[in-house]
Length: 111
Length: 114
Image (cartoon, rainbow over all chains, first blue to last red; front, side, top):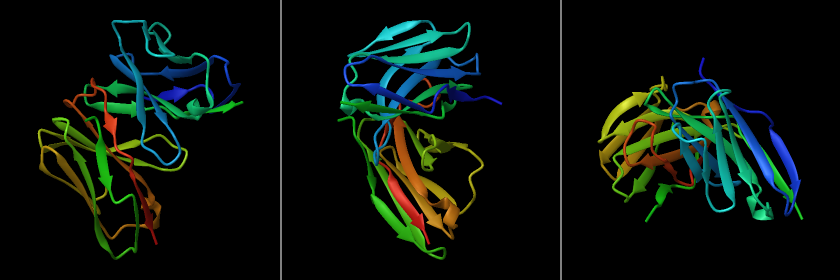
């Protein structure tokens, strides 16, 4: 079946380090991908998105990379801060209907 | 205004109760969604409304009944729930349906079924 998954359930980094969160997906027909951040007790918050006609997109302190050949998506966070501590989900669209979410990676930032 | 609001924030209900969750957005979005999220799991799609019509029902049990009274409002009516239905219920909206637009999420309703 179709799935969106993350390689690591948890990631611990020091404040100021760069973080890389990975996501593997199986549906090669997907053409839209999103990263969400979810803090405890809150709904998912949009971070950045990318369409399949691109392989890289940058935002403020974040970069998303898309490798369609190996069906891999990654989120890079520069100079990670304690406020970045949260669960990060990747999501892809499915058959033009809705988004499927990956399993999530919990990012812990220590100062 | 990029806010999706949900009420109530918390809800405790017995298995014989009837209650409703409410969601509202004023971004002019024409697609609205209900998701269910269990602890430490990703959100799972339940329903999609497009132009106020139900377009996707992910085989959700009939004890969950969605309603879209107008383009800004989305309700989820609950009846005869089971304890395993306890979860965070998230509402989201996007400009259009189809999975190719950013979805904006509300803060969720934490539901406990006793």
